[in-house]
Structures are given as structure tokens and as C-alpha cells.
Length: 101
Image 1 (cartoon, one colour):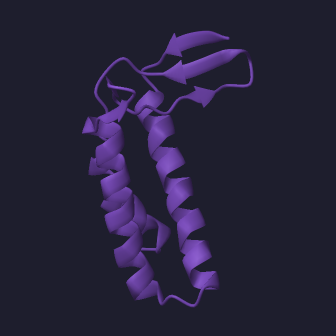
Image 2 (cartoon, helix red, strand yellow):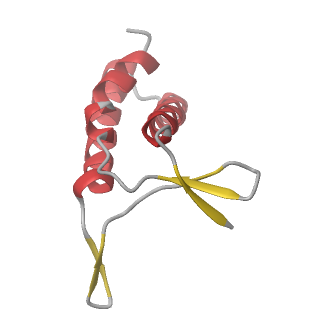
């Protein structure tokens, strides 16, 4: 598989984040969580997950890694970025959008 560094990466990642929020919203709704409480839970969770993605470090067997997501374009290319991302800046805005605000 070929890797493509794309300037569209952050737009794609922001849409992925939005879809994650919608999925969490529907799951919490199915569990009987109120919209108000769900919005607060989702905003905090997605912000923290995005901070892990943007600036976090995980260690595996003594080696450090910065988590990154990538996207398969269904044409043999893996879309990614070699720049710092700022998904945490979209977390609460995407959450508000998912709740119709």
C-alpha cells in the first residue's frame, strides 16, 4: 500500500471525529443518557482522545510513539499527514454541531 501525505488530511480527520461523535451520541441515547449529559460526556471524551492523537505519547516495550490515524482511499493509498494535527480544536465545535447547535 502506498502512503500519501495529503493537505486534506485534517479535513478528513475532522469528519472522522464528527462521525465518532455521532456514533457516541446514538450509543448514549440508546442507554438512556439525556442529551445534556451526553453532550458533556462526549465533548470531554473527544477532546481528551484528540489530545492523545495530537500531542500524546504512548509507550510500547520501552519505545515511544505518537498515535496517528490514517485513512484508506480505497485506491491503494493510505492518507496521512506529516504535520502536527489540531483535532482537539474541533472537539467541542463538532460536538455542538452533532447536537444541532
